[in-house]
Image (cartoon, rainbow, N blue to C red):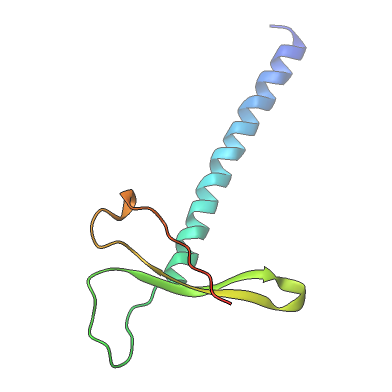
Length: 89
């Protein structure tokens, strides 16, 4: 192998190693953010069998604008159900 091929191979190994570590890190961050938005109980309401999340999605940080969302997970096979986005206003 010549020097150019060795350098390219080393770069590719480094790049994909870094990419793999970055994706794992992002996944952990996403899970932590999801946990922060998990609704565990609502005052005066009975407990429910499904997960739901609520929070804000920033749309314009410089003006402090955000959209409120409330996500309800499907009760049966949530990984196969479509996502519906409803916006008012």
